[in-house]
Image (cartoon, rainbow, N blue to C red; front, side, top):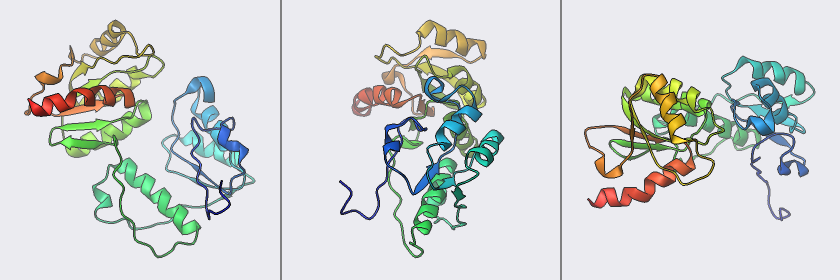
Length: 254
């Protein structure tokens, strides 16, 4: 499959030493920002998740910017015999500076990889990433994030934009939706629960109880009731964004 290719890039699904991509010995491993997610598979603490992910490294690695100090400690233990490639201090373009901060950090990692591969002089065009703090219009933003770490990144953008939003939200029951809501709480005017057809979705009554316990107004989402004077953030997962977009075409034609 890769005989006629110079490079083969593999994305680990849940990440970690047990992922199917580990059948291929890697020359360079990118350890992305680590937080609590998929605990049933990866471990129930940041340290355990970090160790599980880092043990998939065969040779050299790049460590993306981290939120938790435990990750650095695990790195010094698990990857002590591996070679760390330090992130390059590239100056990103003015266009890239308009990206959400977490995407700017991801871009720095990508540029470091290109530098490592010997591409020292190059120009790049920023890709359009669907559902990554994407502005559908002046008052509607969608993001497919679904965990506390993603919520922290979104909170930084809301702070930077200085906006209070109506959060169009739902969550799978195995996600830490309480922590997500706590993180976004300072920027939420109201939570509107969007209906999602999936057996894994948390019971509406439970989600409503959590929202009310945080002293946040809660309502049910009706896309035809959206108002141009309000700012909306659609957030919670690909399923949440997909459920929203199914009705968005009707909203545009109203």
